[in-house]
Amino acid sequence: QVQVVESGGGVVQPETSLRLSCAASGFIFSRHAVHWVRQAPGKGLEWVTSISYDENYENYADSVQGRFTISRDSSKNTVYLQMNSLKPDDTAVYYCARGRDGSLDSWGQGTLVTVSS
Amino acid sequence: EIVMTQTPLSSPVTLGQPASISCRSSQSLVHSDGNTYLSWLQQRPGQPPRLLIYRISNRVSGVPDRFSGSGAGTDFTLKISRVEAEDVGVYYCMQGTQFPRTFGQGTKVEIK
Image 1 (cartoon, rainbow over the protein chains, first blue to last red):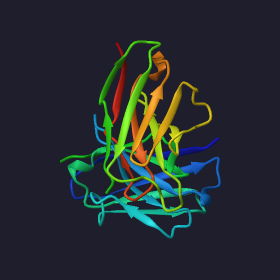
Image 2: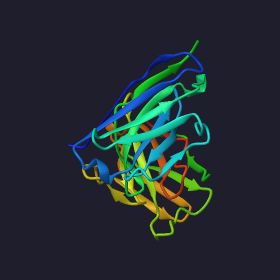
Image 3: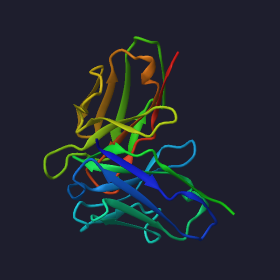
Image 4: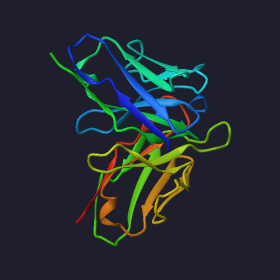
């Protein structure tokens, strides 16, 4: 079945970096965009970034533009989120989700990122 | 950026009674390809979000038919015909017409 699994979260200090991974299985990876969505503790959902099925397009929320970079490795069916210059406001559960027909149809369990000194 | 506004933010409902959530976008969600990319997600307590409905009214396989979506342009509605205990959670609308993707604030459905 369709599955996406996030990993790489942890506790980091402000202004440091972290890389998250999203491993996909159960579908043809190269046919779908992949998105990252985050949820701060007790808050709603915030879209972060996405990469097109063919890697030609990347989009970012203003809040992470210039600090976060999304990439994908089709040989590994994996999408990465490189997060630099992390701030306390980046503290959240980060979800990976498959894009389909303008929606996000399969979500992982999420990985928690805590930015704190 | 398209702003998505949901009402109400909280909806206490009696078991077996209907519930309705409104979602309004700050601009039309009709894409240049003619489709309207408005979806609804459910997030049960302690769980990741789950897609319920896409393109306004298309239910995902396995979603009970008591959930229905409707609307057009900038005004959309999610209805639960008879609320069951497993429907407790937060419901979000999301627009997929334009980047950045944006979500409504979420509507908490709880049992009275």
